[in-house]
Length: 198
Ligand code: SAH
Image (cartoon, rainbow, N blue to C red):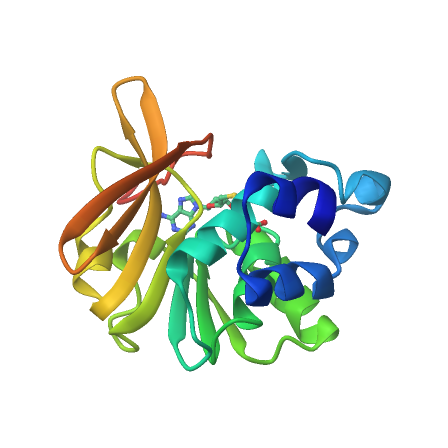
């Protein structure tokens, strides 16, 4: 997976490649999909949700440019896979998932696998985690309309990056926001970021 899917598509950060090689992706997919765990695509994980394609997880992690000392916020934890990858690249991860069943399953799985630096919370991740802000990086795994949620932009430390898929009309792509600047990257597909009462 690392050589065929990641290096070939331009993932060059050795820390990200090492993290992708070390996290056992098969532990994050349902038992009947384990064979497909390393396939070059997203996989369904139940509840209508998906575990992101390996390349997308690696690309988002690379865009964060983590050094290892940061506290990172992950929104849309799903299976917990991306949170596990991020935890290999920073000091700690606050991971927020709105679906309580998915959040419980992710928390149990991460504990069992020994990812002790990840704290899973249930709730609306678009509000962030003000009690732990500012963050040294924020990664959002669900698509926002027109802009990244304001609360998340406000919870970024100076120099830290917020990576978020943003939909504007028919265009859906990854955006990096850092020090008020906005950089567009690859076109992507994510499930919607559900906020408020939705
Ligand atoms: N990163 C995940 C994939 C996540 S799929 C993985 O590695 O497996 C996107 C997830 O975002 C879904 O589980 C969905 O329930 C969640 N989600 C959507 N809106 C949310 C919100 N406002 N706050 C937290 N989680 C949200």
